[in-house]
Length: 405
Image (cartoon, rainbow, N blue to C red):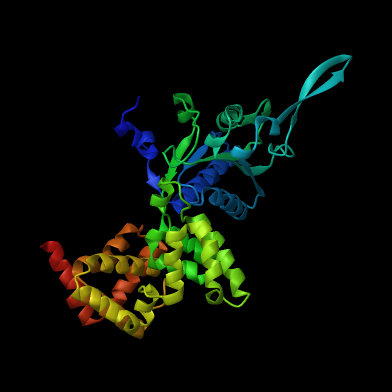
């Protein structure tokens, strides 16, 4: 029997691989495919890489595969198809059917291939997505192994321009999966583990025009994006996919009298996506807006100043940290334009809160690559704020002294 300690080892630690976010994974895979195509065009015959994306359910693994195909088509000017195979709901027979034929008086069998196999054009391009590989039955998994390892189905090769991406949930206790793994199988794929990243979700939500309540709720409470505790006990749990569905529901009510006039109905529906506890927090946010909206810190600081002053007076550093975290999430995702009035609001906020909380402004900046839009925005904002002596004296120099201490 395995020990209790071994049972608690996370799958990502078992595989001993790096962890990154969904946007970075998309960039890495897309760049690899572009590089491969360029090598072929230059006469360098390198092998295709089979990628395996592992991460929590609902984080957007399948969606980025579709985005990869769309963006590759735009960048390469080649038509990129995308086939998504849902392993839990199909069988091996959905791929291959032996068909008896008579040729020269002799009976033999030919294989009929399904629409899941790209056959039409040997010069075609596409992304072949094997979704939830570990939840397929064993006969299907063995066929999927062949596709991932050999780029062929039975005796039929996939067109050279097709690239395979497998998607899996982690082999942790929260998921009911059946991994068919061995050393040979592991070595034939490049494994990438995706973590939940609120900033990535908000950027996506803004781009896709999610309902403002969803965007503002996660900007204010980034930790509510994924409810890991509810997932562990088998409850309905909030995740990026469930918030996307809820966004569509809210848009529907906007066209039918408004969300606030249907909050009772929204509460019932949302509980089936987020669970009752998270839904109550969301409904309270929409109804009363008692939480500090980070947008108000930038544009209407007087509306929330009394709440922040109360937290400072009561040494409620946990709440201040939560406010600061949501404030930074709002800045890097919305990138609001800062005029002199907004600069005054930011200076009042950053110079009033404890320095060990305010430092999150600097540490968040350092999290981003220097070439990223987030780093450039925060750096430009910092330079703009330093034009005011209060910011230099009460924030930056104070921060510098604390660091030296």
